[in-house]
Amino acid sequence: MIQENLEESVAYIRSRSQLKPRIGIVLGSGLGAFVDEMDVETTLPYDEIPGFIAPSVEGHGGRLLLGHIKGVPIACLQGRVHYYEGHSMTAVVHPTRTIAMLGIEILMLTNSAGGLDPQMQPGDFMILDDHINLMGDNPLKGPNIAQLGPRFPDMSEAYDRKLNDKMADLLAKKSIRHSRGIYCAVSGPTYETPAEVRYLQMIGGRAVGMSTVPETIAANHLGLRVCALSCITNPAAGISKHKLSHEEVTQTAKLVSDKFCEFLKDFLVSI
Image 1 (cartoon, helix red, strand yellow):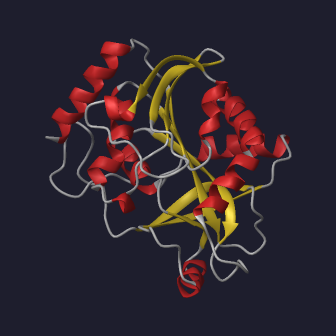
Image 2 (cartoon, rainbow, N blue to C red):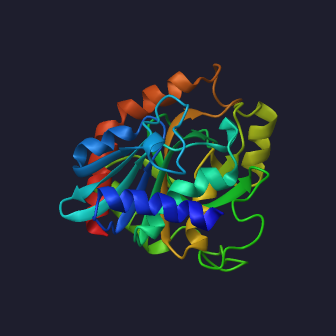
């Protein structure tokens, strides 16, 4: 059924566009303005694509855009659906699998996250070197779909080291505050308690969020090269001296939107 749903999504998209993207990108909370940098050929709202679900969260546009960045063919998912919205893991990773079947070789994931390191400041960026899946679920659970990948995919380099090094070099060249570290994925939708934040720090986490890891797992299963970048929008609970809100997350992401878009455009062209 999963394979049939993917084929239906791909057939619909190909009926609207013949573009074969080389790079796929997922834009997280408040980071959707990047689409203004694209030479867009085709825009498809998620609720028009069979098998896709429109996001219900502010800051997630819910559109697939096909086009180019300085001649590089791109498939851009403007916004994502989340596990905490009540969707299955299969539904969460369906758009990722769909753009993989359109022909992408590299997947770039972005998100807004809480900083677990007290030295982090709102508006900093973090390159994901690894992750810890604390969501209590996995998109590969159930019968394996051999057409997509192996039963037991290797995750020893979930995030491509060469792509990460390129990101780090470019961020440094642009004098953009950044770090590298481990992203902890939790199910949400509640923000973490101070006790949970202390636990995440103890196990090596530097950022925490409610997305990205399912897509990373599905993309590695498919054999894609993956890289991911978090926008640190707020200190996590217990580090922050005030209560957390989604409004703060989206506002901080919008404040760094210009430098994020400039970096992302140059990075995608460089790979």
